[in-house]
Every structure is written in C-alpha cells, then in structure tokens.
Length: 39
View 1 (cartoon, rainbow, N blue to C red):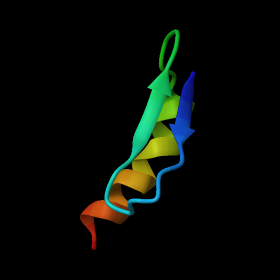
View 2 (view 1 turned 60 degrees about the vertical axis):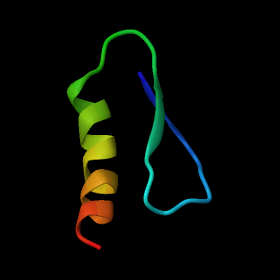
View 3 (view 1 turned 30 degrees about the vertical axis):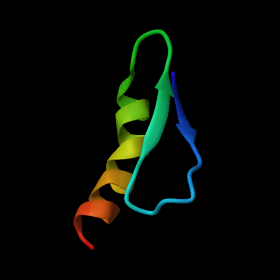
C-alpha cells in the first residue's frame, strides 16, 4: 500500500509505503512525479 503525504512544497512527492507495492500504487504516484518533472 502506498499513502501519499500532502506537502506545501510543489516540487516534492512524499509517500509512506507499507507491505508490498502493487501496480495500482505505482500508477497512483506516476502522474505526480511526471507533473513535477514537466514543470
């Protein structure tokens, strides 16, 4: 499971992982990372 932690900074993605990461977890964070990289 992947929990996204809200931060005020717009150039950081913070997460908390527990157990095994699944495909759905990666699909959840992937757009957030690319949004930062595309700025």
